[in-house]
Image 1 (spheres, rainbow, N blue to C red):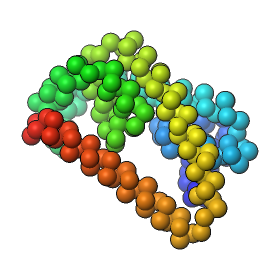
Image 2: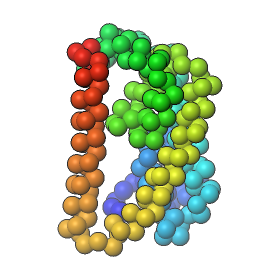
Image 3: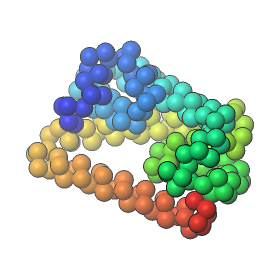
Amino acid sequence: MPQASPIVAWLLAYRYPIAFPLALVEGPIAMLVAGTLIRAGFFSFWPIYLLLSAGDFAGDAIWYSFGRFGGRRFIERFGRFFSITPEGVEHAEGFFKEHQAKILFLSKITMGFGFAIWTLMAAGAARVSFKKYMLINFLGQFVWSGILIGAGYFLGGLYVTIDKGLQWMFIVGLIAIGAVAIYGFGKFMRARFGDNM
């Protein structure tokens, strides 16, 4: 794990009180880091797991609210900078309404293949029931937090013990896997929604 990472420094300096706000902003990264720090003995599993889960879950509620109450205006004004059109969003919302539970749960446990924030905002814009939205995200949250903290716990130890050259290969490999997943998801979305995306 890079020693210069500010998330590592903040967790080590402020410990449990900083976990919730960190998860609100950078939940997945904070969970991976926390897993490694649990292995090193800096944290107990249950308190950090619950705090990080709560912070990430609260972030989901914020993005939903943004989509429900301000997403349309944002897309109309700034969507072109992100290659998002109102027509594409309407098309996506139709698909979203047909498969709400599947999309929300899979998005939660895969970080939306790089589109998690847009998925959460789309749920708000599509007027998905807030109660249903929160229930699905609540269930997905505990699975996802466990996976990420577990990955940090088991893979973090590996990262620390391997040679510097291999560390860079490890980082490049993770970036490559993430890029392929995002590219594949984008290709699927373009095929599904055509030029409107």
